[in-house]
Amino acid sequence: MKINQFNNTPLKTYSESRVTNTTDKAQSQSSTSAPTSDVVNVSSQAKLLGTARQTAANSPDTREQKVNELRDQVRAGTYKPDIRKTAMNLVRDEVDFLR
Image (cartoon, rainbow, N blue to C red):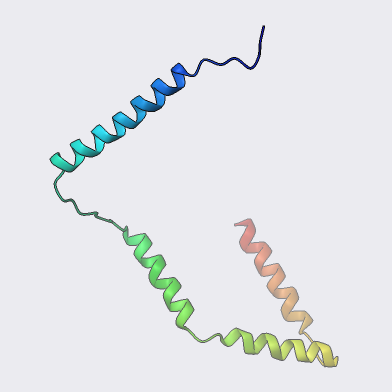
């Protein structure tokens, strides 16, 4: 048995018919197709999301200033968090979670 003997006829037939089919399709589409337009429908939820993203992108970032102030306080060693307020917020969050 020789491994290097191939029969190329089936491959040629396939490739030739493939070219012929695509040519026929192109010709039939060009002669029978009418100009069409694309239509995009966007849901109200997608519109709302887009508006929210645009508003967030255009709004000034006031939290960045707060973060920078807190970072400077931590680095300087002057940051003194209100432990009672933190504890109350943690308890409130747990109670809300259990509801």
